[in-house]
Image 1 (cartoon, rainbow, N blue to C red):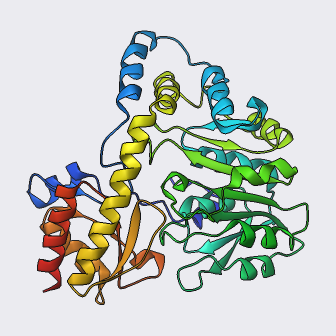
Image 2 (spheres, rainbow, N blue to C red; image 1 turned 180 degrees about the vertical axis):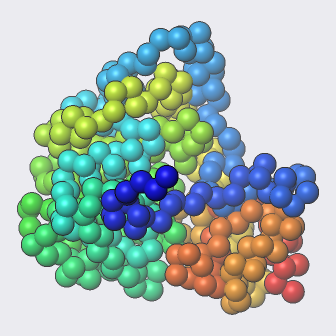
Length: 362
C-alpha cells in the first residue's frame, strides 16, 4: 500500500541521536564503553531530583498537572519572571514545535545557522515553511549575515547560544546591535540549552532581553547541567502574550509527573549544579591542555563540549574510536568533515578518551 505523503514531510531528514552505549556494545561485541557524544552530565542526575521522582512513583496512575503549577512557579521565582511567561515542554525542542506552529504558515521563512540543531529545520518544514540557512563564520554565528537574510517572509530567527556544535557564544552588545536591525514582527528564539556552562561574563543571557517586551523566546533545559536528559523536561520564557499562544497549541499533559517532580527538585540542588560546573570547567581545561601536548588542534568553548580538528576523515576516526569503546560525535553531517565533537566527561573517562584518540590518530 502506497499512501500519499506531503512533499514538505518527504523532504525531512530524520534527527539522528548519538549512538547509545547498549547499541555500541551489541554491535561491536565489547563492554565497558564510554559515551562522550551527546553532551550529557558526567555526574549523572541530581540526587535531589532522583529522590523526588522516587517519591512521585506512587502517583503514576494519575494524570500529571497539565499546567505544571509548582514547577512553573518555582521557575518563575528562581528566574525573576512571571509564571505567565513560562511554557513547559517535553524537552525544550517541544517548545520549538509550539512556536513554529503558532508563528509560521506555509511559505513563511525561518532564519537559522548552518550547521545548527536539526530540529529547527524539521519543525519549520513540518508546517510547510522555508528554512533559510546562514553559514557560520569561523565557527561563530554571523549575526550580520543573519540580519541580512531577513526578508518580508521572515517570521522566526533561531539562535543557539552557546552555539552547538561549536561552543562559541555571542555577547549582549552583539545581540542588541542585531535586534536593532530587525523588524518588530520577527520572533527571535534564543536556545540556551548550555547557558549554565558559559564562563564569559559578556555572554548573552536572553532572559535579560525579554524585559523590553521584544518578541524574544528563550529556551532552556534540564537535560544538560541538571543531568535529567532521560526524563525530557525543558521550558521557554517569553512575553506573556507569546506564552499564552504557545500554550494554546501545547499538548495536554506534555510533561509527566516524574519530570515535573524531578525538575522542581533539581532547581533546589544548588550543590549538584556547582559540582557539575566545577567539573566541566576544570576538565575542559585539562582536556584541551593534554590535546595541545599531543599536537592536536582543538577549539575553545563556553559549553560542556568542544570541537577537535583530527585533520583526517572524521567519520573514519569516529568508527575507530567506537572499536576502542569510546563514542564521540562525528561532524561530517554538520559540514565539518575533519572535526569531531567531544562531551566533557569525568577525569577517568577523559583520560581514556585521550589514550584512545592517540592510538587512533597514530
